[in-house]
Length: 250
Image 1 (cartoon, rainbow, N blue to C red):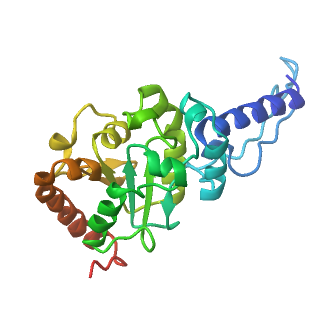
Image 2: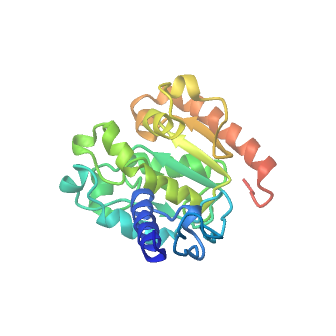
């Protein structure tokens, strides 16, 4: 195989990987390998290929470039019914990444996450432990387009958006992730357990602590669960004090 042929295959794989993941995997980061023509078998130095190895980590894209990919996405049927994509909102280096289920009607109209009554409650919940989307938090969803009638996203829809959320996590590098609701927890943690079984404990996603609590919409429907949600928030506050010196809940 010639060096030119090898280079063409490399570029094809690189393009496909970036489109699939929404960010550039580490194996393709940095300078391209130096390919050479294969030698005829039996000749000295039968093959000579130089490759610059990369560390086993992901090279994140910027939030703006991820948002551009989300805006152009047509991977699933939700792209045909949306008014606006909702990539997320908050600061670029947050203490906490909040992951919800998907945009609702108000979010679909505005392109912003958690802006209706549930969003107002989420902001109050975060504020109770010194968190805010304006100063130290980023808010995103499992899917970036509104499912019709606010139904739960189908598995194929969540899978189509998965690489976008992963790219956001790699770019944001949050100190902690909060899954708001069962849909977020099931998809991020790859589990079939719901909130009641998962809450009260920490889990991990690529080394990042993950907490689970009720979706604000569920708390609006059943206010009796707010006491349990407050316990979850206090658990988060205690862990953040341990792992984030810059965290000030007061």
